Length: 199
Image (cartoon, rainbow, N blue to C red):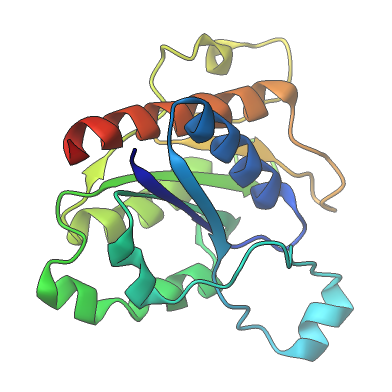
């Protein structure tokens, strides 16, 4: 059974919702799943004024814990077309793991949310995946075996680079059922590949 970490940062719950759908897919595929979040780095006054909310059911993960997993699926909201500062700060602290090659050969994947359809989902996923590639991880994307991402009948996320959703400018739009299905598909795919590589 592959050990899978779903590591995310979420300001308003959209990336959190995708993380839980990914976990469902990974568990259905036989994965031993942990959902964890990175530390909040914004000042408390900003967190309160902006209405950020964190899911305290998910523990805060520290970089040295990453080596314990066979796969790491990383999620971050988009900030000006790239990953959030909270997630970037976390990966900036993984130099020791990189020096030791601790993540080489592990499976990695990405997920994100943006305010609008063209808010930088793919560039954010590239910025997530570049960290994983530098660590020598094997990247898994959201392939077109998940045909839902080809739909033009609704405003949806999803790309070959990973699962995603659209939050709306005020954060009020919730993930579409197609977005959640894509996240679940991605989780299952990662779990199956990680199990094969760990065998």
